[in-house]
Every structure is written in structure tokens, then in C-alpha cells.
Image (cartoon, rainbow, N blue to C red; front, side):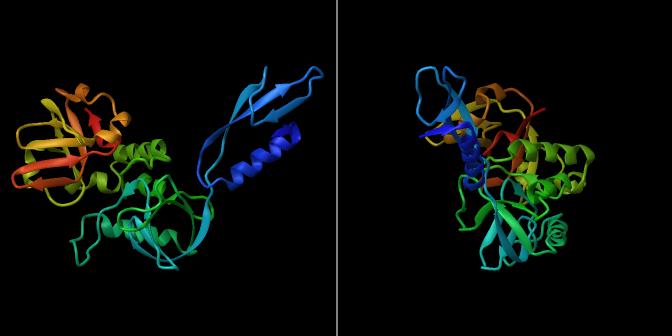
Length: 278
């Protein structure tokens, strides 16, 4: 396909508008002996590659109600889980209320007075509970996932391969943490020695400790703090992290959820934002 400069620009506009997800493609730019510029999707002698980055599309949906601080329900009854963030739980038949959960839900309800949102998907569109996974935007462009973090109402929870806006989300969290906004000022979410993990409460927690060794299995690579506690990273996600051996002997902050097997404790770390060197 050969395009003049005029039609190349039109092509770029259509591509950016219609693309369902971000991706890169190559177009080749050529200049003939008369100085005329043309573009093609096929390489040729003397042609220079031009990379086009398409922008993700957003679709408008009506909202029925807010389920909790990080989940909304659309009018078609589909549940939408906000990507990249986690808010404390509200009380339900399955679990007790966690500090900050009600505040996050009320904040989200206040944002959705117009009952309409734009959804922007990442690579994986549904979780194991069949909920839609999306970045949620108001009609005025406000990014609700990001705003929850900016107000200290949520924590970053990035689960690969979904990682869109991760840098912005992390920066928003760091700002709220520095100012001790929301959960960052609550005693329930303050940093504790990892030796206290045996007294952990349910929900998202923060611990500090020094790993003493590393152990690799078929599925996970583990940083061991002692003979009863480790954190584990799925081998499929190791490319996101620095070499895990570099963490050994360093003071770390670990953020996430504790899993217990008899008298052994472990935390699954999905992204480097949950493993901070102090």
C-alpha cells in the first residue's frame, strides 16, 4: 500500500481512533528525486521506517451503582474492576470491613453522579471472577483509578500483563504516601517488621525485613527471610524485576497479601512496585 503525505496523515488519524489497544506498526517514508514524499507499509531501497503508536480506544457505558471502592456495576449488570488499584474491603457476608473501605466507596459514588463512564481495557479484559478489568474515566476525562491513588483511598496493585499507566499510578501513590493521605495515615497500614507476620490481619499489609537467601522452583523464585517466611515472584514475571539475587541482604519493604500454609507464611509479589528497597 502506497500513500501520499496527505493520505498518510488521514491513515494515522483513523488508526489512532479505531485501534482497540495500543500497538506499534511500521510505515516506510520515501523521498523521490523530485522531493515528493510517499509512505508505504512495505520496505524499499532508501526508505526510512516511521513508527506509529496508536492510542487505546474508550467506550462509554451507563453505570447502575458502585459495588465498592474499586468495583462498579454497569446497567447491563456487568461488574467492572478498576485496573491497577486496590481499595480496602467493605463489609459483606464473606469478609469483615477493612479500615478505609467505606471512605473509598463513598468517594467513588460521589464521582459518578452522571452515571456514565468510559472504559479503557488493557491486554487481559477479565479476571478469574469474570469481572471486566478497565481503566475508568469520567466524561470530562478524569481518570478514576489514578484519582483514587492521589487521594490515598487505594494502593497500587499491578498484575501483569496488564500494566498500562503503571508509572503514573505509582507516582500518584508516592505523592499520597508522602503526604500521609487516606490509608497512609492509618495505623492499620503502617510498616511492621516481617517477624510480626504471624500476627497478620487479613487484607493488604506492609512488612519490612532482610532476605537471607534465594530459592528457585519450576513456577516461582523465592526470597527467603527465614525458615518460615518468604516472598515469591512468578518466573513468568521475572523480566519486570531487577535480578532477584540483588535483593538478598538488603532492607526491603514488601506490600501485599499474606498467605499461610500451616506455620509457613508467603506473599506473592506480582510487580516491582510491591517490593521496595529501603
